[in-house]
Length: 91
Image (cartoon, rainbow, N blue to C red):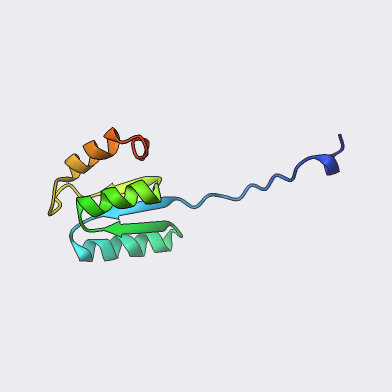
């Protein structure tokens, strides 16, 4: 098989998907500015409940997580994420 017969392989770098979780809107604005400057794709959440919903649907590569949230702690959110099959591998 010649090179022309081989399937085309394109190595396009994958843009990381980030979920930032913080109840302080000023912090989220700063995080968004940094992620924009790094050309990241991201989602923002201000509560643990919303972060859990986004993580399930959005499947981010990484979560930037505040520990003190209005509905439940960031550590509790982390525990919930680790218990679910669809989110347990997010770092």
